[in-house]
Image 1 (cartoon, rainbow, N blue to C red):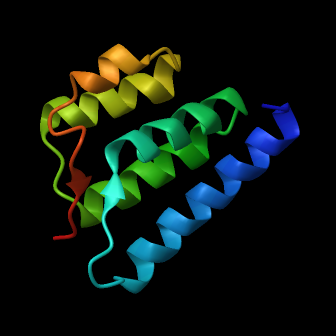
Image 2: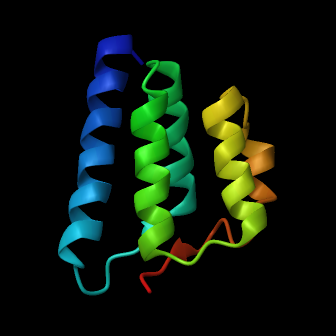
Length: 99
């Protein structure tokens, strides 16, 4: 995917997640894979602060196990979480539910 298209898609995805969390859309759930992709994309763009803000926002609204939170922090710190690691995430095929 062209870099500018990827950046635009990542930016849009982050804004959609933030908006959905802020307005408490009934029935909306954040996908762990989508969140992981957004964090990787932000890290790749050098937007570490934005990635950390997004993760903190999600943590406030969605129950994350300590192990899952640590895996997301790993994405922000290293950006080296591949699909196999995502498959090992606790409930990776499930959505994050609002508190």
